[in-house]
Image 1 (cartoon, rainbow, N blue to C red):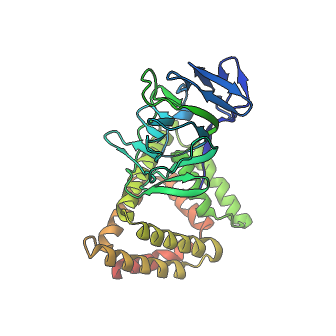
Image 2 (image 1 turned 90 degrees about the horizontal axis):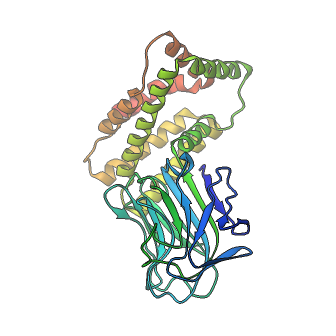
Length: 354
């Protein structure tokens, strides 16, 4: 799964009151209040201590999923200690009872996992991580061990406003100020482009293309580039909407059961194996049959396989275009992926009989 590092503060590069970012986006942090720098970490010594990272470019926007990692050494925990918080977007913190927590704001509610109390040790260095997959799963990791998880996350996250703050609630309120030492902070995101890049990687599967297929791929990319800019923008916008609906559908199917998440993940791994390694359409169809039987069993017939198929068909048609350019693109896709031609009738029969 592709992640993009959007802020990487190793706490060993400083310039005046700034902590320098090692990512290509130059999201440097500004030290404010009673905070001192050392080789590899900073010490927060007062209620106003914090590091502010201004949200001044697109790199700190467009979060579809996020991962926040930190190296921390808290002193005696007397109140909530903020580790990293994106204003009105996400929060990663330690509760007053030593519980590690991470939450995401979806525009209406804050949701996220929590560990048991007294999990975060005091006066010791710990590596902590909060990860949200952008669909429904979030987890907390403490020293390489999962200590909390939630399968009930929203499929969307509000984007950080104005600032992301380390060790403090964004801006003036001092009630959640971290007391102790903070080392390496890394913030990563998955945006819509990352997700599409992953999807294309799965589609192509690093397969070796024939000269004819390579020629078809080049022609396909040329035709896409030759489309008018406005049309390219419309298609991109539609595809992003399509992806958001697909994520929402996946969220609904996945549910809130850890067991169900594991089962569906296994189905996904099997399908990727059938497509990428053997190009075995028959095997892929058999896996899909088992998947639909499983979904029928789990959901008790509440949504039939036919209904799910129709929803997928509608999604696939959302961004359809007509005209000679698009007809040629379809022809090129069947050259690049000839197995799609043989799969069409099999898939029709699958959903007809599911």
